[in-house]
Length: 296
Image (cartoon, rainbow, N blue to C red):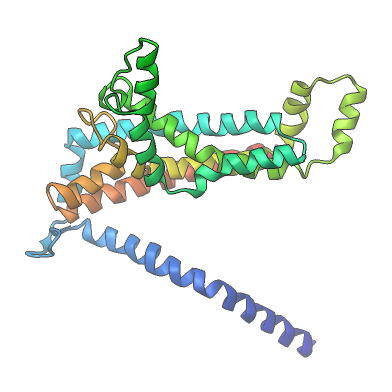
């Protein structure tokens, strides 16, 4: 028994050794900045860390009277609740069309995953060049057939939709890869039994595939939701939060108040805490709901 205990402790120490690098990275780049944001949110502090004083709850009171902050919250919700269903829906649709593990389907899955490997900043620069109404390729091709393309990124009616579509185009390959991996683990006997019953491809997808990968779909929804709430790169590059702050999300507003205009780290940190609480609450609610559905 003592020998088995020593072996167990040895394996545990080895496991801790393997996760140590990840824990160090998380501590330095996640936990420490998170604690610092909570502390700074209660201070009056500028970017240069001069004249630091205790603000108490003044930053939070100021935040709830800030109309621009509420506008950024609204834009963040619009972006999230449009982008997440669209991204997961597109990935599910393509998963249905590529369930077979053929060489052609493997090639397509790899092709769809390539944009996700690329930087969101690089992807956004590419699309900003393509969608430029003066010198973009799409504007040039449309002009050849007599169609004048509006400046989509400067129009308040189209800018948010363009940002959402660019985000979906870049990210759905990640969701597709996870969903496809889950579908390949479904036993073929289920599909064979459905074929004997005369089920169509759509019915097999609805009644076999989706129930079998429901947990994976839930994971994709939660992770995509968290990433959508933190959207920044594509908005900063494509629209800069404009026009008229119509695409400004909470993260872009935090960056603007903390590092561009006011240089007010205390107020920016208070908004960061507000965003963290929103993400944490909604994520916990979603996970509990998905776990309850899974148990049912």
